[in-house]
Length: 152
Image (tube, rainbow, N blue to C red; front, side, top):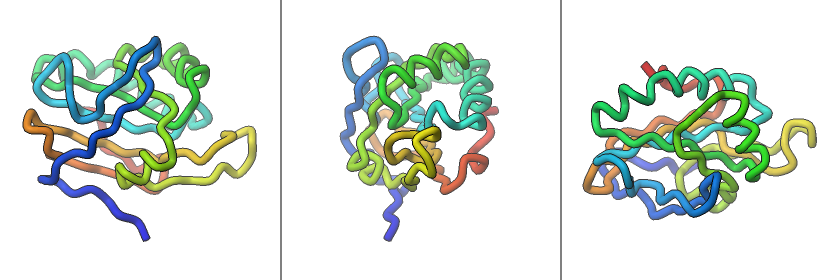
């Protein structure tokens, strides 16, 4: 059974490895009052690449409204770095989201159809907006790569 997070509840404490070193503390922004967390499927997903490229152009707007944007996936560090290279994304990037963390966030999890796709289970898209009190203000999770909010 799938258990999604709900708006208004405290966002769970989840820390993930940050590309370039250190950790990303999900739900606890460091550069703004709010935090917007984008979860993408992985480097294997062409729809995710397009989405993250589009998101890059919106980062100044989010920053101007007091929202820190972070992006995470279950990809290992090398694949996360390749995604940044291919999309030009400058938002903080988290990697190696574990299966337990995916479930803690209420994400749908897919099993790869082949090793070409991925060598591990991966999360389907999710978006979480966490307010300054650490509560989930908005949540959008999907069970398919093409169902996600427009960054605009």
